[in-house]
Length: 389
Image (cartoon, rainbow, N blue to C red):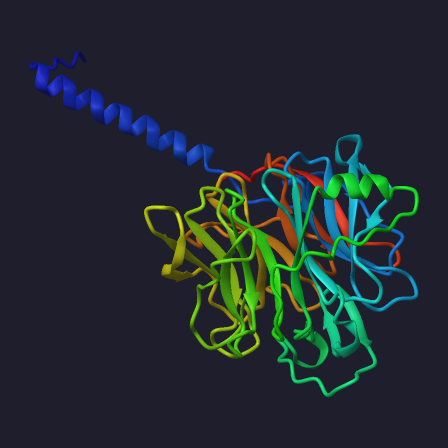
């Protein structure tokens, strides 16, 4: 039977319907499936640190030739800060150089976007008064001698078998070291130098959890200077400090998006020791000065601990750790910046957390207990964006 289409208008309608039908059929058959294993997202998984009783929270230099991380040397109890060259296309590190002084506590190292500066938090010069007992997903409980009673609050999930905590020593300040690479290279033989010489903060309140903005002009961090753990921003030289959050409860671990427009962080707003992930827009004036935050959005809202969020270089995705599979089995998940399309990335029993992407987005680096001796160490892998993420 021959079908005759009488008019151009009918022909056009027929053509549109046919195209839409083909597109619909194509989408139905090509819909991506979520990863079923780590191999769907990660390849060449490699352990980078070994000669420490624990190591973690590593970050890439902008040229991807170096990493900075915190680690506890054998026989010691406090985290120290280390810098190490990344060699063989990310398959191993050269000899790590310790850049923090004994017996300080240290955390949260981060490189400036131009690679010239290194920041980290340390109790350097104020160690005598430090006090705390710390447990975390990355370590067992350690107790250190106290010269005065601890009054610092603890944060995070703290219930019986799933306890994790980190301390908030009032002696913790943020330090900045310029021309760090020359100092580290000169110390390659001895394996140690002291880069905690130029404090950007100096008070009797915890200042830590610091990271540079993508333009290198600002640093965001967490502080207890108001009596509550809030987010702050300051210029890269420590001036013009601005308080960003004003809500009771812990806010911490901030990172600014690659386009400089948003900030992601973890928070215990509900006061139930279950951290959740938030995103907010950054308010700037015409000169680019940071004034505050607006349009705060909660991306996770459940009965799990969701923490350690970090931006993918595309600015559209955020990776984080969650206890959705149990407090003895933290896993990494990826989600869109609006909180949708949560996709599992790691599938190995034990702790996986503190994930960061390389500047080119091709590598993922994180802290994991997938070691033969069950200590937490730094791992790296090639990353492939999962379909549909």
